[in-house]
Image 1: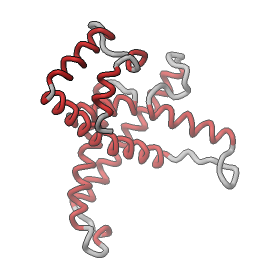
Image 2 (image 1 turned 90 degrees about the vertical axis):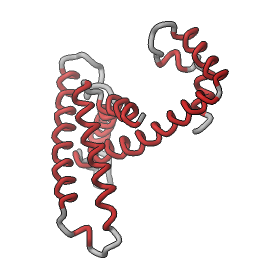
Image 3 (image 1 turned 30 degrees about the vertical axis):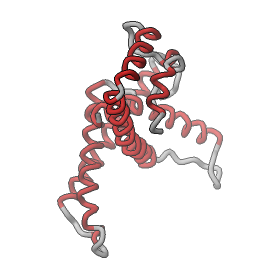
Image 4 (image 1 turned 180 degrees about the vertical axis):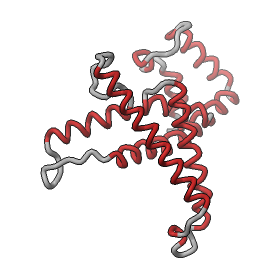
Length: 190
């Protein structure tokens, strides 16, 4: 379930090809794992300044992630320049964030009238969205599936509703509001 939600968030966040999204997902997953391991030593005063294999690997992964995200930004910009999308940066959460930053820069936001385009800020926001979203979404889906498995009558209602509203096609954004049973089932834990 964690991999599924991670893949969905990667695609939503970066609007990339499957392979690029998969690469970003694995980099973020590795960063999360290493950060958790390295935090075991935080109780030692000054430990954040000690060199360690975890710190070196985290630094390497951060550099690689930055390169992949910058490539994704460049690719999104090319797609927009070719006219395949109306947004300046393409689609996806990253594109929306970059477009907002550009608007603020054009307006001259900030105390000193300047707006800085900070790549580090963009990457940190992407990490935050990913880390906050994929674990909680995975837990929500796991509990929802567990409850549906223990209450087959609701499982049948949800399945019938999806068949009636969507037919054989995957659900679209327009159809989500019509899936009331599914929505109630998911929102029971939110």
